[in-house]
Length: 137
Image (tube, one colour):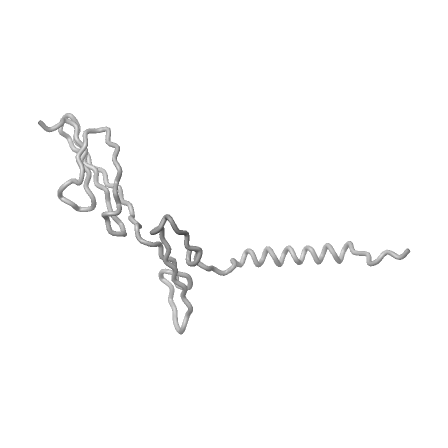
């Protein structure tokens, strides 16, 4: 005999559910079996009166290494030769930490340079205004 209330879980456009539960449902979704990229968890719930409700939850799987690209952004119009830095890092090994490649090198932002120049300029202004030279004895 099938339960009156039932929750079926589907991934993407699969016709067969990967799990069926009686509500309330608490489960662990194993994303290691899914390829990286966008997916949809589709939940079909049936009430005691036999009416079904559907909810879709889009999500993205990224089990592989994260890829960072510096020097080329999406939609850029480019010409000539241009330097590009590509870095891929992930959490493949929990027993060993790799210092090399764990951060993507980036230039110093312009606002940091502006703040540094303003600080040096104010310091010079203050020094010139209040410095009276050596005190004669």
